Length: 227
Image (cartoon, rainbow, N blue to C red; front, side):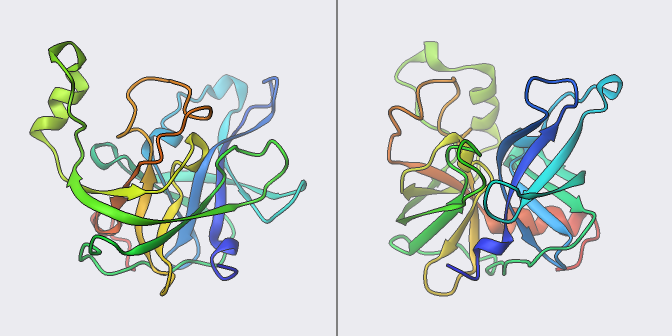
């Protein structure tokens, strides 16, 4: 775990005219040559206002005075809710697992920022297992719950990890890694669990989902990024 934390970063927004100039939006992790950061697409899919000089940033380090650097989005995959960011200064990378799906019952760890930076930048680690590998669509109780977004995913569904682990909105983009090897097997995702903004912090379900790492590697390859 101590080897993993230097690779965990916070993904945020710099807004010089906002009430909070530096906002933490989610989690991410460094991979590849140390200049790449993986996170969820929904974490960085912001409408930035050039007039306000807004830009995406990365928080690294630990404590109340984290290091901050500007990043650029160099690749996105909205279908799998993934994004790759480019750092100005490299950080320690984490190792990615092979493309094969990890078996059910695999013990996993998850490290990120579940409640943001309320108390400073302190990455938290949670333990659980892979409960199942299932389609990325959650069944609806009746037709009224079938939104256009869900119907589209029915046609484009793919297999994701269902995790027996409690995660929070701030964990979006966190690495899910094998507890023995430390290799990242997936990217934590909360969007596939809840379509509405409900009280996830007050009543976490105890079930989370992660996008298999093969899709991150495929996104990198599509942009000519060698891993």
